[in-house]
Image 1 (cartoon, rainbow, N blue to C red):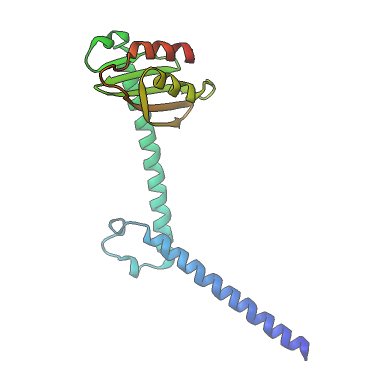
Image 2 (cartoon, one colour):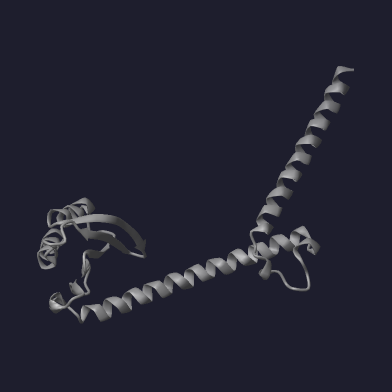
Length: 190
C-alpha cells in the first residue's frame, strides 16, 4: 500500500512542478511581449487578442529588427568616424594658432587629436587593439601640464580602440600649452 501512496504523491509532485513551470513560462512570455512597443503591433490586432505564439513571433521579429538597426548604426558610426578622420587629417598641426586649437597626427594608427576650447581640453586617441600603451600615463601627461581630468573613457569598434579624455585647465591664467602636451603624447605613444 505504501508503494501506491508514493506513486500518487510522485505524480502530484510532477503535476505541481509542471504547472509551476507553465505559470513561470507564461509570466516570462508576458514580460517579453510587454517589452515590444505598442506601435509595433498591427492596428487590427491588439496585444490582448493575439495568441501567445503570435506574441512570441512578434517579439522575435522585433528583436531581429533591433539587431539589424544596431548593426546599421555601428556601420554608420564607423563611416562617420572615418570621414571625420579624413577631413581632420587635412587640418594637421597648423590649427594650433587658431582659437579652437586642434592637433591631429596622420591617418595611420595611433591617431592623436587634441582640441582646446577655452578652459576645456578634449583628447581623442585612436589606437589598434595590439598597440599597447598605459592609459594612466596619458592622463598623467595632461595633469603634469596643468589640466585636470574630468572624465576618461574608451570604446572598441572593430579592431580600433577609441579613448576620449575631457579635461579642464586647472589655473585659467596659466592655461595649458597644447603643443607641449601633444609632443609629450606623441613621444609616449609612438
